[in-house]
Image 1 (cartoon, rainbow, N blue to C red):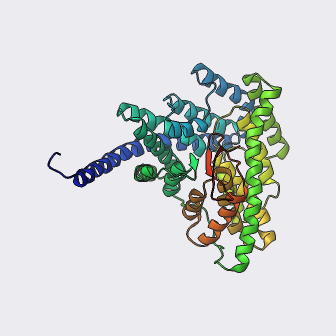
Image 2 (cartoon, helix red, strand yellow):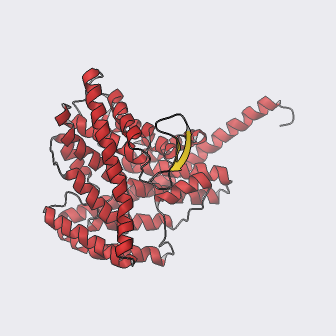
Image 3 (spheres, helix red, strand yellow):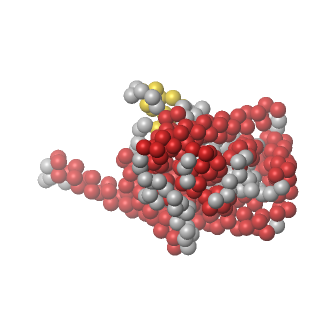
Length: 419
């Protein structure tokens, strides 16, 4: 373009880049969306099968070692899970394609046997590894490869959870808190929306969000009540994160053989299930969340869900932490919120958003999550509860490779990893 001025040439190049990312993002959204739909259906079928045949839970001591052997046979025994995805975005670490089928099969096996785990965290690994492979096929450079990985994260999260805006922002926000990757905004949104449309095409997420009909308007008393609940959710998220990090260290200390600790972890979860007398805390727990929001209160539920999840994932089972975080926040909210004078289901919804915020250190994603799951009513109060949880949860987080760039208390650079 020798006849164009520098400014005109830049405009043409920007337009070409925009079109390029529209095409790449749609491709990733369709490809990752289809695999995520299969993943969603596989987990649903596994959960339904366990519901019809509760005795399947006796397979827990076998399922754990089977997952360990699966990763060992594929040369991925030291796989770092979602932490590797964060490093892939920040430092262009190479993601292996074999991560996708491994996390796909192992997470379904975890849910089938009754381990306490989610699927959205696993979806980040699934989408990231698939999109990274697509990026290599397209011969993208290192910087474009990072954007492609974020697109895959957003697409898989969106297709599985039905929150496309949250998924897009979360992919940009979670890696380095305080420094958003704005260059990835359009690619992440397009891939996320495309994947959501793919999921809708398979009639997934027909029920949008969760039922909350008692949200409060912004006024002085609700501001004080919601702030107090946000403080509680900050403490809750710290306990959750500390438990998730402590469990694998304790397992490794006392049971250094991975196969033995997987079998022991499965046995512990099995025994706890038998002691509680139900499978309320096995699997992800979406149906229990709906029960809680509809009016149930189980005072011990948040503590037991943390225990079940830490024992499951710490032992080597695979899956995500996000739905267990939402479960924990909801159970805590419907228990603590009414004591503060807040309505029941609104308290549970506040707890879900704020616990997610404290555990992931993603305040913008948490506010969008509240909007997409619960609607716009009471959104300023959701934002306040999330803000309090974010600020007071300190530098704890689910992902040890996540970096927090700025202090939560002062406008100063700290650049430290969560713990």
